[in-house]
Amino acid sequence: MTGLTGPGGLTRHLLRRLGGAVLVLLALSVLVYALFYLVPGDPARLACGERCNPQQIAQVRSQLGLDQSVFAQYAHFLQGLFTGRDYSTGTGVLHCDAPCLGLSYQNDQQVTQLILERLPATASLALGAMVVWLAVGIGTGLLSALRRGGPTERLLTLLTLAGTGTPVFILGLLLLMAVCAYLQWLPFPSYVPLGEDPEQWAWNMLLPWLTLGLFESAKYARITRGATLETLADDHIRTFRAYGVGERAIVTRHALRGAVPPVIALTAIDLGTMFGGAVLTESLFGIPGLGKTLIDAVRHVDLPVVVGVVLLMGVAVVVANVVADLLYALADRRVALA
Image (tube, rainbow, N blue to C red; front, top):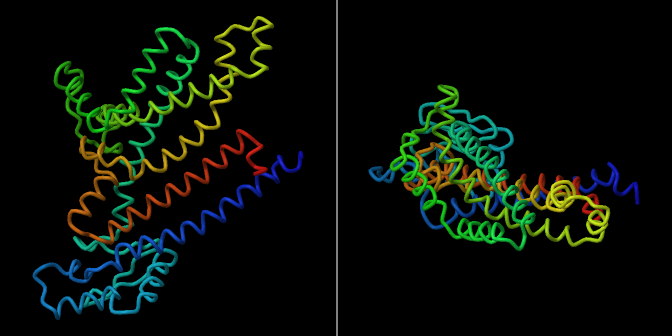
């Protein structure tokens, strides 16, 4: 049993999950490619523009490799991801380094470069919101469990339900109106890159962090409260009470351990989905992140950008699930035996 729950058991557990993740990512690449490139429509016409004549469209189709078989096109797509690929410009050859996700129809910019330019804004939004939802969610859940049966618990439960039912866009508008319009504590946010002015960047990201963090914190409060109350009903907790251990110490030092594994797993998954799921928050506060990039690409039918962002979102979710599974196994070694 010790060997199974030791480092070797965790290694086998991780290898199994990584093998499954590779298969999922391969299936995801097939699905994404088929969904956006093999559906009815002509990507060459989209890339060329509405004013192109049939000869120009045929030339663009040849340059993009769309005149080849479906299997050859997908093979070139995978080749670009792992080794890069070359694109004909009509007068020369443009090399796209790996991982190559194609060229934007709007400006011939490499999609990978475009994503890397927008990724820091989304990453900073997701990480800042994570700090908020963990602090508020876990704190609220613990306080609710500690004051169970009292008016404090009922108030926190009501606030949690209200937070769960309030759309993130409405929550953001309420914060803008309250903090910026009525109280005038802050000016209306205007995104400033971290490298230009860290202080202004932090002040302008404060409301987006609060909006997304408070929205997500409601479910963390419910999970923390439920897991803590479940642990408080265990026999060893009654033993601590019999020995005179205070209720606050029991909740914070012992019962909280029961809430750690699900919170860890949920945090990793939410952080992965946040890379593409913060569309409304980015649009509301004008943050030039991946969510806003995806909306603009869909509006202009820029297929390579749409495929690139969607594929990155899928990869982030798969990787987050693997990380969550590993962290869960580290928190509860019995998982590695499953």
